[in-house]
Length: 167
Image (cartoon, rainbow, N blue to C red; front, side, top):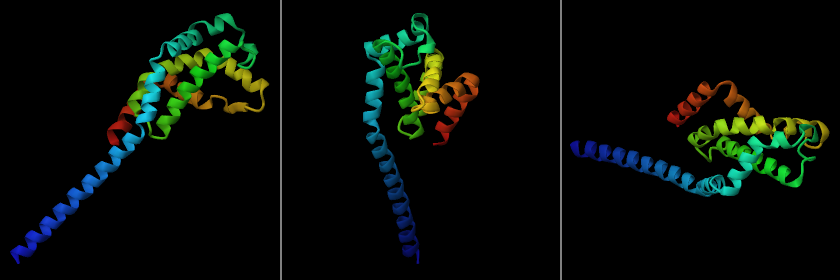
């Protein structure tokens, strides 16, 4: 009888440990699949070209160009900077929504995202008016994220950290 109980206990322990190891392996495999996204994100973000375009969009774009031009009416270099920076941040947000990048990555960029949206918003809103093909969808994920981060910065950061602790 005691031998049977010991065998059952050992079987349960073996099942629990193998289940834990299988779950942990699945998590590690998922994280390793996300490594290329992280590398792209950090390599792009730390490049001099990216930082120059970011600074241009945030500090000079509105001084040098009339928002009534929309995005498509901007000179090529300015248009490229708006699209590169705007879509970079929107892709980061999309990667978070797909659970590919962590909340901490997005949280560290939330104020930069607000700053970018503030700089390009008049151009994007005008582009939405003059280019019906893109309509209200142009950079809408970026807009929603920036609005949430701007309106509720502390709640926003806390909710991200809270979600991280639960997962």
